[in-house]
Length: 390
Image: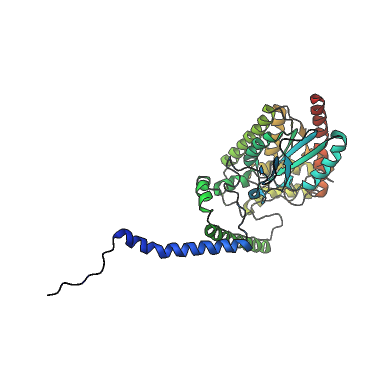
C-alpha cells in the first residue's frame, strides 16, 4: 500500500508569521493612509496630562531661533501664542500674569498697559507683559507654571485666580495621569491619532447637542448648565478644595519670594446678581434675589457670598477672596482689591449689575477697572526694583 502523501511541514513559528503578515500589512497600510490624511487634516494638538504633569511646560525653545522661547503648540488651545528672549535682553522689564480665562481675556488690555508703562518705567529699554492665563486653569495647574517662569527672569508676577477651583478638580479626575507615558508612545502612530481625534470630535458634538437642548429647555433664567460637573461635592470636599486653593497660592507666593521676585495678588469679584448655579441650588439662592428685589443690596450681597461659599461653583465666592486677603497679609504681598473696586463702581454696589459678561468674566469696562487696580502696585514695585538695580 502506497504511503499517504503529506505536504511540507510548517513549524509553529512560520505559521504564526504567516498569520500575522496580512494583519501587519493591513495596519501598515492604514498607518500610511493616516499619515497622508494628516497632510490635509492636521491632528489635534494635545496637552498630555492636561497641564497637571510637571513636564507639561507652557513655553519651549523656538525651532530655528536660538535664545527665543515660544508657547508650546500643545498649550495653544488654552493659552495665547507668545514669544520672548532668554536670557532677558538688557534694559527689559518682564512681567508675567498668572490666572485662568479671566486673565486670558486680558491679552489686549495687557498689551496696552505695557505700552503705557514702558514710557515711564523703561524709557531706554522695553517692558513686556506675558499673559500666562489659561482657559479653565485654576491654582493647581498654576503652581508648575509659576515654577517654570522663575527661569525666565521675571521682574514681577501678577496673580488673579479663584474661579476654576472646582472645575479643575473634575479635570484632574479625567486627566488619567498614570496613563500619560503610554499615551505619549501610542499617539506617535498617525492611525491612533486619527482614531483619537474622530472619537473626540463625536464626544464634543454630543456634548454640544446636550448643551443646546438644555439651553432651549431652560425655564429658570438663573440656572446654568454645567455639563463638566458630574460629581456632587460634599461640604467636606468643598472645604478640602479651599484648603488646596490656599496651599497652592501659598506655594506660588513662596516661589516668588524665594527667587526675590515681587508679586501682586488680586481679589476676584464674582457675579452675585446672576451666578452660575446647579438647578438644585437655585432654591438656596432665592433669598438673595428677594433681598435684591426689595432694594436690600448690601444684605443681599453678604448673603450671596455666604451661600456661594457653601456650594461647588465655577466662580469665586467669599471663601476664595477671604483666602486671598489672608495670604496677602500673611506673606506681606500687595493686594490689588479688584473686588472692592468693582463693588464701588456698580450702581448699587453689587457685583454683576453692569460689569460682567457672565458669572465670572468681567466685560470691557470691568476689565479696565481690573487693570487700573493693579497698575499702581506695578508702578511702585517696578520703580523700586529698577532703583535697587542702579
